[in-house]
Length: 335
Image (cartoon, rainbow, N blue to C red; front, side, top):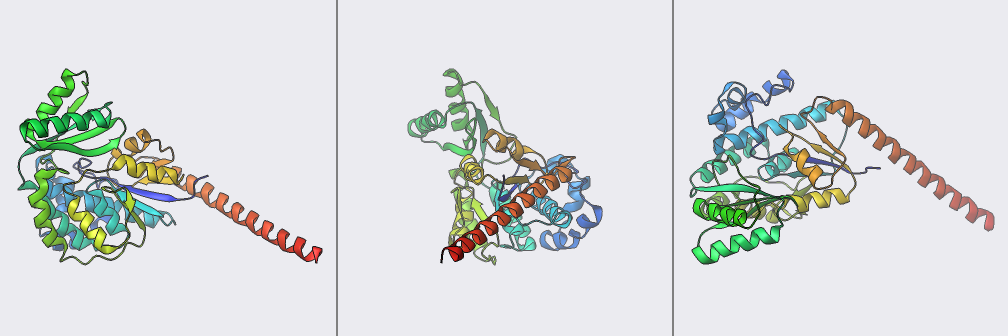
């Protein structure tokens, strides 16, 4: 029976026009002035009524997903009495986890990811591919060959599941790796529709400049355990947390390893935010008790799961008390 409750927050690629439409209007509107003050433009109006070209700009996508995911989280909090044991965000989603755990104020986080997006947009041009059904050692071998032979940037960027690895780097380098993979029988390579190539050394300059920005932001230790997705381990102090957010831009996302850790807890897992990307990845990493906040029957399903969990924990506690009293009585009788 599940004990822990883990919350997953999506990253870039989950955005779409109208992704706030299924949330209560009053709740969404309560964040408009804060978001407007933080960003100096009406991002809620852009999410509701804008066009995909604008929304897909990295500097717009990042605060848009962060805000939407956090409003989903507040809606979840307002609707269900629960406390999360652990939070984890995919790439950009880590900022949503930090805001939800009261580590970074929402206004500060919106400014930060907007500036982060601008820095990423100024980085060297690159591309990303998802490689399916191919062992990571094989992918790393082909990437290393191109790096060594052609002195170009290409590397593993996201380890999403054992069957889905994303590579990133310079356009020519990435295309060469993909061509080599296909020539060797690894045919399932899908180019991602992204404006920048993140989680690789093309982001080195952006990462260095981002450090100056993040050093100025107040960060508190999270009230809930946070799994850093570039280390697949829990945050242990604020200094490491800051450093992980800086290196986050150039290091690969260890999502599969993070999901293995969460799966080992045998708990309830909730994808909190727009879309269902992380639900699919969770299932491909062996997680069964996954619930999607944007799905139609979410609240019915999650309330049922939480009630079963609460009942089990209560009965377990009662059983422990009975065993404790039985032990005391037997000890008293034997005296």
